Image (tube, rainbow, N blue to C red):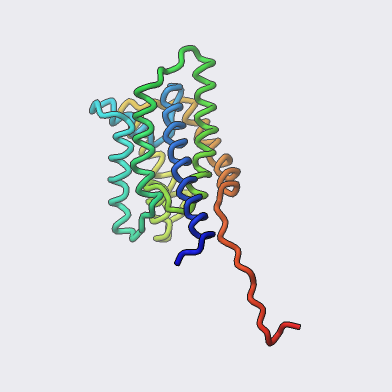
Length: 212
């Protein structure tokens, strides 16, 4: 029988995961709406969207599924968070982008961009801190790093590649892309420890032979 404390902890982790993914999808939508530059993977997915007419959120789901297939030779195991990451973020993006009007004027767009970057940092802390599995793209990078490659180099090569391809396809690259690249690391460093769900503390067992 699962102890009540363990059940409560699991509920909190799942709730935090879902909140994080919902916020992540919303924050990605804000970056798109600001039209001042988006993160590398969304540049790629937006480029695909422009050439196919398929919504960017749907492309996020399709690309996530394709990346998951690359986990197989790397022997990476997806968690609940991995699967929900693929579905929820893209679904929220399409929902928000189909119902929210892009801001007009430079200053409102800057405000939406800054809000999107800030929320993205919080969302990253929420879903990673839940500890229920990485997103497909992060898992790919970790899997390659586990093969002896530098994680920083792997991440740089992959993100520069998808950024370049997305830009060539017409994806929106701007100073917002640079701001995101510079800000997301420090924001994640703040919010991941803040939202990390700690293991349950168990009381130490004192042996009667040593107890005084």
